[in-house]
Length: 335
Ligand code: GAL
Image (cartoon, rainbow, N blue to C red; front, side, top):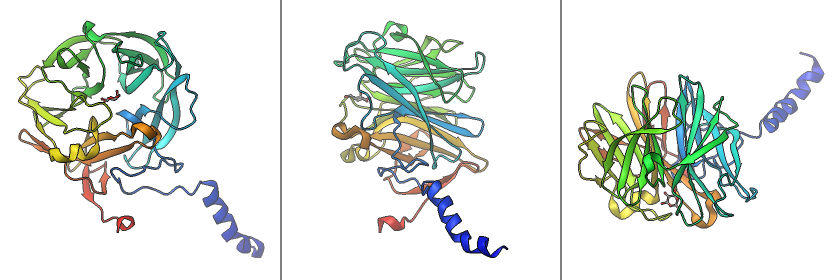
């Protein structure tokens, strides 16, 4: 090697590291802690939803960084192939009040569905005014997973009030919206063929639950949700049914009730079906109402089967999305 190049090599390598922004590959999910994206910034995807396109996962959520323009509401998108390292793909929504809802209008819990027929990415979100009296869903559409999404319309699904929403895509690809209808309960409804409407009610579960999520596991449907306590955590619960039409069992605790779901609120259940095993991840928000940009996430693999569901105490863990296997990790940083 040329002598000068030899001398320069350490400097050149250091410059490469600096240029890459000191990004450290994540090999561990640390529930409840700051979760850096590939640029080292805490992930801003609160009340989120996840879809998988090919080998890539896309995580959409409420972007609540400090210093955003308060006239707009933002939805972020992150991508990952391993569920641990997330790359910020930008704010796929930057929207001004679309329906004259007033200065403190609300866009929450965005969920994106990919429609195979129209090839469109259809985003649903909770659209409201500051007193949460409007209770509608909004829809925005994009040709690409990473946006930009264009606002289309808002409505009350099946003419019912709708606040927190959840998304569920069954193993056969059918897409459903879960929504909280304050006077009646927790509704599960099928989307129309083009996903631009909510078409058919599958169930009204007469329980006042929000943060709704569903998973289909070994022939049984499991639904989870939280009680209606706003940003404050409460004991989340689950119920099961042989079909989405029910009958649904009584709701039971998913974690020791005194922990208030370890201080978190459900948002989604992610199914990772690998070559060796299937892992279901409980995805939840740890809200910090006074400092929302610092709100955290609890992701934990759950114990599930034979009608039982349990979220173990959050501890650092790792997953292999190819095999579907996960394990706890002794985290040196915690000692
Ligand atoms: C929670 C809900 C959040 C947000 C909050 C506002 O119950 O899950 O998405 O709407 O209330 O207080």
